[in-house]
Image (cartoon, rainbow, N blue to C red):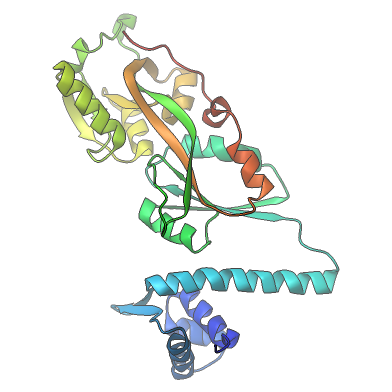
Length: 305
């Protein structure tokens, strides 16, 4: 079995980080043709194409993404070795790389990360994207954890560990009604403009099913996939929003918005997704063992009849 050429791997890593052959060649002080030849040799050794050309840019193939994950780990270990030899000790600063699906509540993310934000011995690297993109990064170990409101299932090819870390009832939230008039559920849904998540959202699917089964009519104002945008629309319009109260926790505390009540039997689940491993970093383990109330940072509301 031939040995991996780490010189070629470093050139590949540089091009992958730059996303452009010309810029990488300039940074490495080599010609573009020489750099291209080195990468072709690595591809021949691995037996897989690592890049695909899209327009004037290079994009990693699936094999390229896998190779990049290993390259990141290899060169990080090399840097740690150099620091150990030069300074006589390991860098005790821990790096935690967390991804979150783009539609996930920013308040929930902040609550989850709060214990780490004031620690000098922890460096956080945060990414946002769709679930498939984040899972691809988790697979090649460029992420340690994904925060999601969608569950994933493990298989032989996908060694995911999906842990529910919080569950919150879904509420109807809006501005205070004139004269503190109570909101009648479900009767007032027919005459009140409603902000709902998109149709591919689990909350929306469960809400529509409940309305269909109970013969409930509602007046749709807008479908909104982004929870941060839904919070702004609820705050700055006469519409009411269907969402977990953690999304608008600051507005509820200030009184700018009020919670009309909890929709019966409707919940949003929050998951932490990682890769199964023999050794789990203690920092990550401690994060995932906290009670749900601490993760959410909110108090429970009373259900509506």
